[in-house]
Every structure is written in structure tokens, then in C-alpha cells.
Amino acid sequence: MTYRPALHALLDWIRPYADAVILDAQIGPFWTAVLSRRCGLASTPHLSHADALLHPPSLRREELIGRPVWEVAQWVLGDEPVRAGAGLAAINSVIEPDLSHCRQMNAKDLLIQRAPGHRVAIVGHFPFTDEVRAAAGELWVLELNPRPGDLPAHMAPQVIPQADVVAITGVTLINHTFDDLVRLCRPDAYVIVLGGSTPLCPALFDYGVDVLGGTVVDDPELVLKDIAGGATFRELRGKRPVLMFQEPPD
Image 1 (cartoon, rainbow, N blue to C red):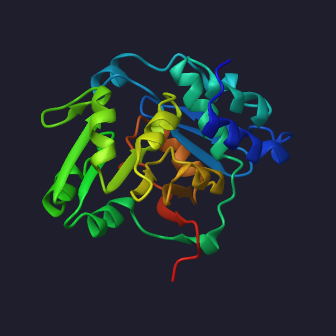
Image 2: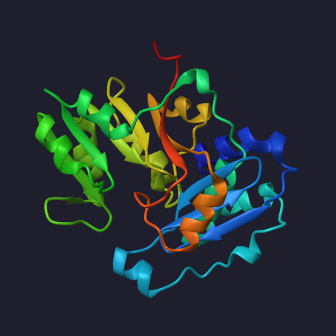
């Protein structure tokens, strides 16, 4: 199996919780949730919004419930996207974020704060792209499935080294592009990993990341119910955005 540095670092981090068992799970068209020590989220991979609705995920929740977290977490290394997403959700379900290093704040707001006068690259198309574009000196959006105004993901080697601020979707951990992308960032670039899939784990700071913009689930029952009903991330209730910094924020 291919060695994937960041994913193997995450697996090493959760090794002390290898005996944790998955108590509940949901695999919806857009999001996957795994409940063990806490509720972990990850995107359910799909080609497009329409594809997610037309083709239900190939994985059933019954295949997760009762399994050791450690076993399912290994799936993140594999090439089957839906299982890799479930593996990342399992990892997130046992990571307890150090709240002394966190601030309740949306990664979008941090990006907009950092954008003025800077060149910004965003990997992954987010709903707030236009707001960042209005604030940034220059903005590039790299996307595997480009929309109008986006650049194709294969242009990352030409774009990312130019950027002062780089925002990378946590989904890159699922599709195994994360390691290559962070290697393209300049040493002086400000790097944010963001989105509901993002592990709030200090291990990722060893890869040139400055801030982790993830999600804390406060009401697992509500989140599981919404995911089962096909909710998108914006529609999910019972969760809140959190930024994790290397040092405790002021």
C-alpha cells in the first residue's frame, strides 16, 4: 500500500484509541458520520451534487456499526472513495480537539481577514468563493470538477507556489492529494485546511499547516438524523465551526 505521510501520521495519533468501537454511523449522499468517542464527520465522495442524489453510497451503515474504529480507520488509505471517507470519519470520531488551541470561528472569516493585498489559492470550490475573491488581491480556485471561473486541479503546481495564502479542503485527505498539495506551498505561505472533513489534530501542523478549520459536533443524534435525511453541510444541525491553531489564540 502506498505510504501517505499525513494519513499515516493521523493513524499513529489515534493508535491509543485502537480499542474504541463504532456505536453508530450514517452514510448520506453528501456526508458520512461515525460515532465512537465523539461524532466524526467526513465528506461522502461524489462527482457532483446530481451524482450524489442519483447514485446512493455503496456503503451501508450496518457495515460500520460494531467494528473497531482502528479497522475502519485503515480504509482511509484505500482507493475506494466512499470507504476512504468513512475511514476519515472514523479517525475524526476519536480525536478530541484541544479546545485551548481553538476558537469558535468559521474558516471563511479567517480567509477574508487574510485575503486583502494577498494572492490566495483555494483547493476545492466553497460557497464563499465570491466573498474571498472580493477581498483578495488575486484569487485562484482549483477544483477536480471545475465550475465556471475555477481552474482544473492539475494546474496546482503552477498556481500554489504563487500564493501567499493557501486554503486546502480536508477532502484532499480522502482523495490522497493532500501530501502533494502541501509540498507545493511556499515556506512563508499561510496554509489553512478547512471543511467538515478536516481532522482537528495537531499532527497536521507538521506538514506546514498553520490553521485547521474543522467542525465540532455537539448533538450527534441530530447530525446522524440529518445525514440520513440527505442534508448538505449547511443543512446539518447540531454542529459548530472551530479553528485550531498551533499556539493558543489570544
